[in-house]
Image (cartoon, rainbow, N blue to C red; front, side):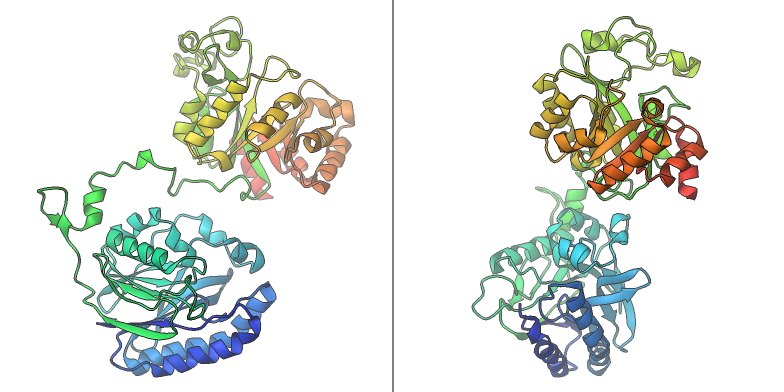
Length: 541
């Protein structure tokens, strides 16, 4: 099988778009029937740097129809499979895609880039909704050959390679720019990809000029990591002969029978050792849409508050957020319970922060909710993270003996350490009514969002507190509304907060109609003790 990678010239001057586009058409004309597979680079229909959405869309509108038609015609004329990458239109908006044409010139499939860079999300405003959903690797089978795909930024997410390998591709089509990487680094990536997927890598990119040491590097790599050709920054096309069904086998460990490398790795994989991943992962707090419903103390109308069953029930029902309270024991263990006093929430006596963890573990935190929960123990923050990290946004309410004094720095650093251990920074935010603690958190973990609560002060100006402490959220407390003017106070506070780029939680609404009223007033997140009914009412809106 003869494969061909095309490497066009690229320019950082948008005025060169026409010339580069005409070059691409001319190069397609040079393709001949000896070629079985032809690959063009990323953004083929945006052939020079576009600094704005308008420039990108102008190129897309001007060049797409003719260029994609030429790719299809080349496939038919050369009796070859052609892959061309560029902007395409879908019912949900524009996307960065690889489009496949079979030997008859018919479009037979598309791959959409999975990892968008900031310019694609915020400058070009490409559709990004699909990137937040679980999906299997795209595999297209054409003429008995299985093709997998990566576009540019996708190359850097090595954890995806193992998932692609599971689907047994013969060839990985790579369409790219990667304009800042050295030729040696690009070659290393492609060799690593080929070796870990046991597939050929056929990568097409763009030339940044004959003397450039970065970018370019259209190449063909075999499953054992042999580079058959690497164009570096030449323009034109390069070809290589491959047998797409020939794989590289190696001993699966010393003295074992030969097998593909990824089979050897899969036999010993321990996925629980790595970063959280998979279909149950929630969007980051700063990416998740509003309005939301937060399960206050978990789904505590069906399970004891601040317990793993309550948190798990809420998450299983789709809660965008859960809220829980944290205390430190005398020996430094971070545990979850609402009250400082043990009497209401357990069969113990005294103050939660004046006991050791071992002493608290002896107490029953479930019997108050009925016989079904007798013997339930107090959960640690680490246990919550072990089960639910990144599966929901966590409103982490940090409690203290009073709402004035700071907490020991080691307590807050331990909370942050656990968040980092379970890779949960972007799925957590801190809620606290204590201004001193909010400022401590600002110093210790400035990138973790903070939410300013009122604490004990009924007349606390939450917007000003947020501005003073750099908090991005505030949490209004229902019992304080009446003292401050009721719903008119809520409305005015929300408007002030939004004017300053601050999101607003309201704690709490257990009546669906009440929750809907708060949403109409502009609230971003509703905390509730009755998650399912309130969530259904909000979703109806």
